Length: 258
Image 1 (cartoon, one colour):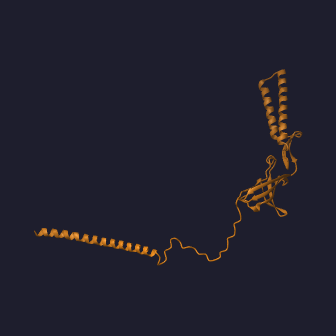
Image 2 (spheres, rainbow, N blue to C red):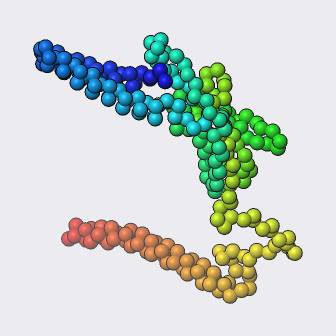
Image 3 (cartoon, one colour):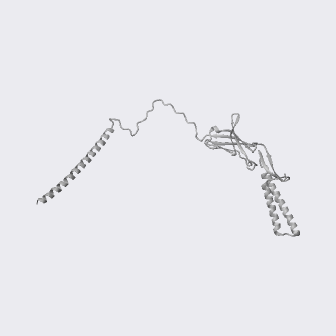
């Protein structure tokens, strides 16, 4: 293969430093030193084999589709180089079924996108008639459409682009927006056959001549009588208060004549 990533190289270097440090700290001599060095080299070889197997399984071209870009260390040139893992750009189709008024979320991200080297951008399309219209282009791998309606049903497509604008992956969506349970079109209002007549409100007065006339007159008469009674009582108290001082003055004058 002849390539390795920086992370795997760092782990292998750390194992090597620990082995050298252990040998130097124990101050081995002669044959014991030789045996210890050979044992450490054998252990480092096994460790490096395990790390490279993990690198090939998890890091080197893990994409099942699309074009993944890596920055690896070339072991023959001892320099970093850009490598591409090229697969079929078409990464399948996702079928989405959501209810009306829910948010429509188109997720264009794949598991290997984050590990792909370099900046990335995403472009979303919608099929309209026999062509496609660009909806948005940006760094976000998600497209969110708030409160989806039946008009949002249809076909969508997204692309992941590298720094040069080359398409690295393509994903398609088939979206179906279903109506809410029990939701139906409101029936039309029937036409009125005649003029609309509303019943009189409960607080409206009783028409003249009805049984409510006597009640009104009784209330008015009672109120007037109560007012007259209060006026008469006030007048009587006023005259009574004026007579009391005159009686007191007359009794005092009779005592002076005596």
